[in-house]
Structure formats: C-alpha cells, structure tokens
Image (cartoon, each protein chain N blue to C red):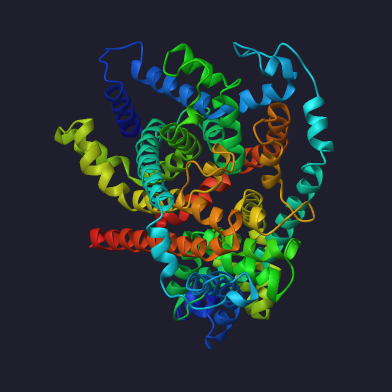
Length: 299
Length: 309
C-alpha cells in the first residue's frame, strides 16, 4: 500500500516535469488545468447552442456575438415544436416509436444469441461472433440501394415504420449482442447450476434466473441500442419521404431553407433532441464504459 | 454434515462449464439462429444485391434491368467528382483518426491517475459521443457559419479569415471543419477505450522499470505502448471504418450539396438526387466503398494477428 503510494507520487512528480522538493505539486496542477480545458472543449459547443436557442433573432445575428444572452425567448422552442415543415413533433414521435420497437426486437433476438455466446460451447461460436461484429463494419450506404428497391417494389412498405425497423435491426443487433454477451459473462454461473438442479428447463433457467439478474445489463444495453437507432440519419433519409415515418434527425436540417439557416429553431431542436441523450449518458456512463471496454481489454 | 457430503460430490463432478453446456448441441444453434437469419437477410443479401444492381443499366424503371457489365464502374472511376470524393474521404479519414488517437491517448494518460471528479470528467467528455452526428454537425455549424458564428468571429478577429468569409466556403475549409467536429466527437471514445487499456497494466511494471533507472519516456515506449497495442488496434479499426463511411457530417456541412463529398455522399447523390440513370452508378460507388472497408478490415485484423505472434 505504501509502496503503491510512493510509486504514484513519484510518477506524478516526474510527469509534471518540474522538480520541487516539497510543497506545490506542479504536475498535479498542470494535470488539473489540462483536464479543465478538455472538459471545457467538450461542453462549450453545447453551451453555445443552448444560449442561441433562447436568444431572440436580433441578438443571434448580433456582431460581435454575445457570450452571455442578453435576451430571453421561448419562441424558438414553440416554433420548433409547432413546426409543420418539418413536422418536428411528429418526427420526434416517429423516432421514439421506431427506436423502442427496434430495441425490443433486438433485445429478444440478441439476448438469446448473447447468452449462447457467453455461456455455451458450440462449434462455430467464434465465427458467429465474428459475423455479428463484422456487420458493424459495413458501410450502410451499400445496403440502401437494394433495400430502397425492395421496399418500393417487392413489398410496398416504403415510408412506413417497417422500412426503418428492418435496417435498424442490422445496426442494433451487433451492439446489443456485444454488450449483452459481456454482461452475461459476468453473471455468476452457480445460480444457473442451482436452478437446473432444481429442475428448471434450459429455457426456464434463462427466463427465471438469468434475466432478472441481468436486468441492469439489459437495461444499459437497451439504452445503448436506443441511442444507436435514434442517432441514425441515412436510413431515415432514404427510407422515408415525409413525416409519416420520418425521423427527428432528418427533420433538423429541414428547418433550413435554400440559403437561410433557421438558427433559433435549429438550436432549439438540437437542444430538444440532445437533452434526453445527455441525461441518459449521465446516469449510465459507468456501465456504458465498462461494457464498451470489457470486450476490448479482455479480448 | 450435509455440507461435507455435498463438497465431496461436487469435487467428482465435471467442471461447471461442461455441466452447463448442452450435451446435444442443437440448443445454442437455436439461440443464435434468429440473429444470424436477420443478418443474412438484411445485411448480407443486400450487399450481394448491390453488386447485382451495380451491373444493371437502370433498375428503377421496368425495362431497365439489362446487364451492362462494368460500365457503371468505368463511368464513375472516370468521373472527377468521384475521384474528388475518394480524395476527400482519405484525407478526412487519415487525419481525423490520427488526431483522435494521439489526443485520445493524451487524455487517457491525463486521466490515468485517480482523482476526485474523475467520473464527472468521464461523463462530460462522453456526452458529445452520444449525440447524433447530425446534431453535432449542426451545433458546430452554428459556431462556424458566416453570419453569426462565434468561431468565425474569432477567426476573423485573428485574421485567419477575411471579413465575411467562413470556414465552410472552401473545400479545404469544409474538410478542416469536418475533421474538427469528428475529433471533438470521437476523442472521448478513444480516450476511454485507451484508458481502460492503460488501467490493466500493472503498476509493478512501472515501479520495476523506475528501479532499473528508465525514465518516463522509455517506460512509455517499452511498457505502455506494447501492452496497449490490442486496445489501440481495435479502436483504430473501428474509427477508421467509421471515418471512411462518413456521410452525415458532410451532408450538414455542405447543406446537402455536392461541393465537398465523401464517397458515401457521392453514392447517395447519385442514387437519390440525380436521374434514375444515376442510380446504378451510385450503387457501384457504394460497392467500391464496401470493398475499401473490407480491405482495410482484413489488413488491420491480419496485422494484429501477426503482431500478436
């Protein structure tokens, strides 16, 4: 314990590249300053968007730009919500519904797949994982052409939720399987053993013992899947034609005209879309990071 | 007493893994098949179909499904817009991934020692990563536009830009803006991934090296870097592939226009913005992008396999 402390102190003093016998830890201060800069750079653009969304148009276009808002208006938000072209509120609803439905389906299929990968042995297991993960490397634009042709001619679901959910499953399943399998791997195996001894079928064990235990991991994976689908733009753009099924990411650039950027409304729309995401990340950052890195580090 | 009996019984049984895994062997296949079927139908089949569509004349009209061989490919390879898009894509990808890796490593090293508020820092830098790229691009356009962008104002005051000009007016400017936004958005991801890799490295290695007299720089190259290699390669692979596929970013920065395009944007414009005759050339461009990604993937994976042995 003392040896660790000694090593850490030695390392941080050397890292600071400043020799001071005792007293001011320049290395530590330098580190803090650097970290403050990093956090500032990460959040500053969001700050600018937030204040732009509450400024009146005159102040938005003021020169020089104001770092602290001098005016206050909610007009941008109401204009965004009530907007007809694009129908922002409807698109918001579309995004939410499609993301939820896709996540549910991805959880159902992905969880049993993840369980098989985490807990069972079978030939080709490495291949299955490789296939599922390699889908994440596809350029989605290569899927768009045939899907568009298919959805407009063979089965006519263009501009409906189905036309979105089907491709969204492809982007959601790899992420779902990846995170769930790493969460499942961390579950204690003795409990499954006990349930089987008690007479549970294999599927019964799955539903009654594993899933309740895995609930936090499942929840985190659901959020990640939701965010992944929510953030898509390409399929939303190509698989829909209007607000019947259009997603909110497609709506945002549509606020702008040919040569005119609707600064106020667009910034309000951006805030509306990102605040829920930011809150989700806030509550789940630890689990997201552990799920992300577990696979990379343990290999 | 029952505990002792149970312990004896346990020690003669097969290991837990073997007991849990199914003897018959069909159950796991049952579990993975829905996922595999979906992937086969919605990912694998469309890729193959893309190749088929790219070899046709005009698949969007009933009479247009005639086989024209590699004509579409020859057509786009000779198109200056396509050649430009390859240049844009490569410059953007290489530069942004290089910057993200270096900066991400720097941030990871900064965060490697525990300090109060580390969780908060992690959250703060992770937030940009959670936003849709569209939103990130929009947010930055608010700062970079010619009319009222705060960064444009700063650049103009520093005489980096002429009055009335903005970063988004020229091709190099747009690429620079795109790199800036992508680095802002993704450095946290690299940082956290590398941080996890860093934290697996046991402290004793550094202590032993210090005792042996090596300085920080040598320690970094001899200890940190080799042990980080696998995390680094995975991160590099995914980031590089993401950058090659860039679409949303350039769509917003150019207002959906055709001035500065990545391969993905070129493909989209041909498929959906041109005439129906441009559809299959657009698909051909997408196939080319797929091949580029496949080659990159194979190269990096093989490299990591070789270097591991």
